[in-house]
Length: 108
Image 1 (cartoon, one colour):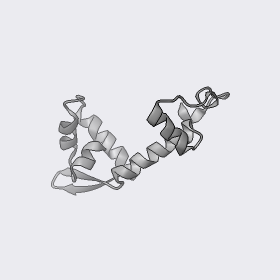
Image 2 (cartoon, rainbow, N blue to C red):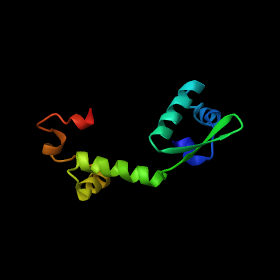
Image 3 (cartoon, rainbow, N blue to C red):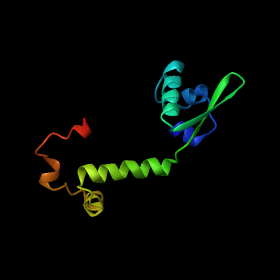
Image 4 (cartoon, rainbow, N blue to C red):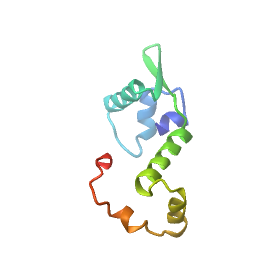
């Protein structure tokens, strides 16, 4: 998604080249991931000549905000204050948060 957010519209080959320095992925692997993101509604796709061009349907900031909210909800009992205290002071979360009494299957 980062490659698509940085430059769009973008082809599978362009995404593959954008992430190549970090990871060597096969063209078909990148194509499969982009296709799945398209099916889930995170990307739009248009066919030009013989190549599909992908564009994001969600903003980076929306995805980031949802991820941070999930961290706060799951690890800090929904308390933004506890989360900010953790970030500012490096203070560990209270024991009842760090050592749950029951297995939380949403984290598996």
